[in-house]
Length: 212
Image (cartoon, rainbow, N blue to C red):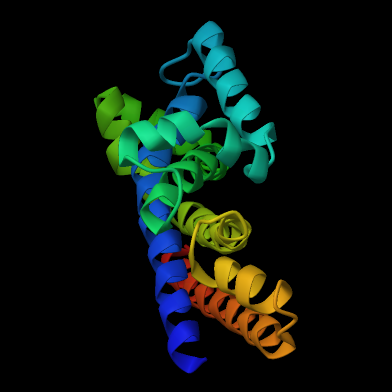
């Protein structure tokens, strides 16, 4: 039992942090674009902003289970299979990218306009404003978004496990629920709670270090 729990935990951590890394890598520039293309921002482009925001909202509005099933052909095309830990990275990442992008957008919107105006008045280019003003000043909010994304991915990974994704979700469903093993069910719930608490504590600590 303990070996199975440890293996399932490692699979869950792999799914959460690998898809979280992909979400941060792609969601950060997406969130920046969402923010700076708004009206009265440095790359003002309302039509592009509304198009991008519509795509993000459409992706976020699809429940994860439905999204996972709907993109099965894409998952199979990329990974060669639609089941297992690595295959689950595709829907997990696709679900997390727009979620994280929105948290980045919100964090950047909290940066005072006077800082941007000061940078522009000193001759900074738009890219310098993004790299040296917007992202550094929004770092605490962005880190908070990373924490929220990872916590959400823990729940998503458990749902993915119920339909062959691997990890604690698969263990709880197949070895706990279907076999009426209450011990497995309770153990997986406790481990998931513990993982979420650790992520939240680490995230809160990181945010506190970057807050002004």
